Image 1: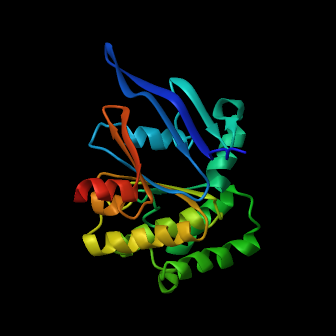
Image 2: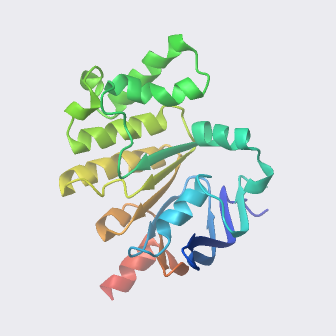
Image 3: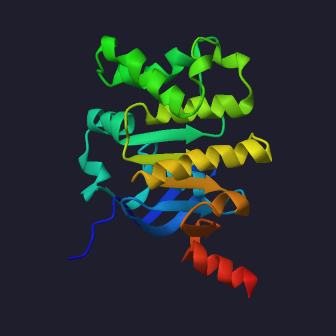
Length: 238
């Protein structure tokens, strides 16, 4: 019996109206991602990789084509159901961090639980557990604008994981970080994948994509290649 993908983009087209013309960010891409995979989506600026992630995360809708999440077409979900999916099913990590600067680290990590109807009595303990996992429990009562870029991204990962999502979508999560910190962040994501979570990372950096087990290359809104990491490495080495 064939496995159902958790993410299935089927002939997805995404157009934007710019002035008097339309710009096609995605030109009919088909991608399947299965539970427990670690996938990197690569491509130059303008390739459509971030647009693809926004559609995967139900943050944007395709112009045409079908998106099946856990076997159900996304258009079948109500707005409330999509909000619950984004809150509980998917953990988001962004390049820009998206933390509240004048709020404590602890309160930033607690925020998804406020929207997820987690009892107040349980929130602090869960948030502290996540901060301990990313080695920042001692910074819980610092304001997030008092941390380094690498620490802030680790807080963002703790926040993404606090609802125990089964899927992590990370859009250029190392884009604002130095090399050493970038690899620390990717090691955390790799650890999450080792624990069974599906991880999709958008990146333009080959050394970051190397953490993934499968690499999808986009160019000009189309899938150029879709290969295992081993296949990519063997192509480079030959």
